[in-house]
Image 1 (cartoon, rainbow, N blue to C red):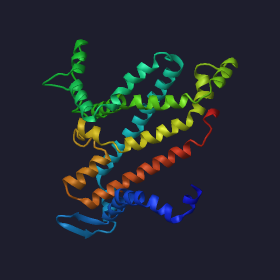
Image 2 (image 1 turned 90 degrees about the horizontal axis):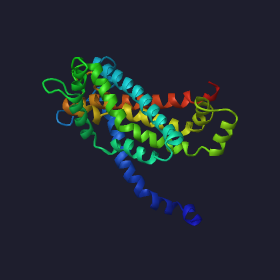
Image 3 (image 1 turned 180 degrees about the vertical axis):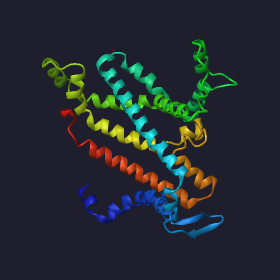
Image 4 (image 1 turned 60 degrees about the horizontal axis):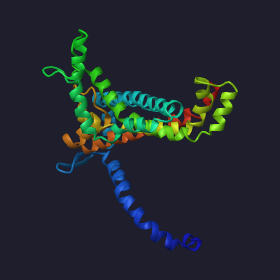
Length: 294
């Protein structure tokens, strides 16, 4: 093995095909997309050099700012809900449901394997309004409350999207954080209990600091996933009502493939990438502080 690793020709033969495929699939499209940002047009009508015009257009575009606002708000709220619910579930599995946690984990994890379109259809049926009244509005009527047009108002649509995403994904984060909690030595927990630590104090001083690496990974995974939300929005609201639930990804898709503005669509994609990097760097820097000191 040492002879192989010391032979540059052998390394090139072993890694060359994989690097070539990776470059063709990942790096070339990225560089190609970056090149589009300084052009205007599409392959049918041709391209014209536009310099930084697409970037100026982005910062003056009200629809782009609306998409940024929805994307950031959705990502922050969803990440708090996903990771918070997942951490709560993992604590439940470890400390209170030891014997039956396997069955409950399976039930809660189940929605993650369902197709997003099927989940969206389920939620459309649950929250549908007049002329056909869904189960949720029927339930409200039982208590004398008026029906709600869930997909006709921006705020209601936003919260239905969050509810759908949370129901589908909290089991995944619950299992992920559960695996992190299992690495905490039982002797350490017992010692803390003997010293009088229990309940919230035990979680804050022992469980939370020791599970911080997997918690941090979950936050980064969640924030990057929710900033790039696309399929659930298209399947449930298609960006409506109006453009109230249109994220940057959907706006980029519509700009590029519906309106044929490849250059501006690539600029939106670049801005989304920068947004993901900024959030990731912010999370890394903010977690350098020792949370056990309050």
